[in-house]
Length: 269
Image (cartoon, rainbow, N blue to C red; front, side):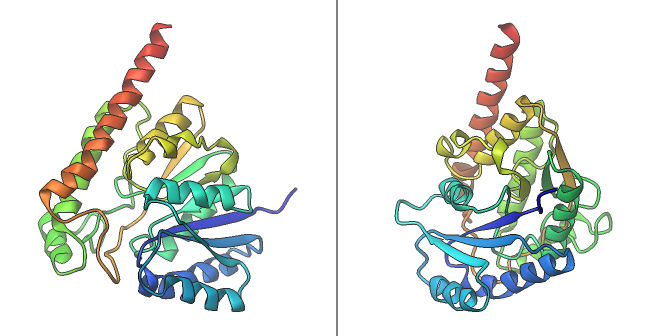
């Protein structure tokens, strides 16, 4: 049997300080799982900090750490697609580089992937064992307490609330029954990923298209609960004002409606 090979894609924009913490943690995860065939690929969207210099320095010590510099317009979905296209392994994982998706969660998703090689594993805040930002302990921290915690961090309370609301709406619109449709934390076989999912997307709405595409191909999606942590350094790219957040969130609804219409059309044919 061929050795399990994984490329972890980290789309970045000014995440140097977070990468200093996250990358060594990921390397330790691979060591704990005895995974030798791995790659950490940073896809940088023209950062204005010292991300490139940091990765070059880390790469000198570990050749499995690499960076791909994007030169075109900044785009989260296209950054992920560039990472997939430039990955060297059969399995790909991507996650936020801000520290919100911790190394223990990465390890758990990889463990599930190794046991379910033809499935996609999604890190979910809305299933058993999961929790949104500000939650101190699953099932024991009130929503109000969680939002107080978020207000003291580099994250946005408004973004956290709207994320939960949007997820509830998306869940009702789509047939897949995946509960965290704004996750952005996933691992799976590269061969099943459709490039068009990313090309037609605006921002995080790519995840809605991706889940729907996998569902329609009858590919199993397994949600694994994880506790979403608060940003370690820097500021969120999602937006802080209501207008910014609605502009970010509206394409998710459009994506879900398009997916639903496509499903209905296929049923009529």
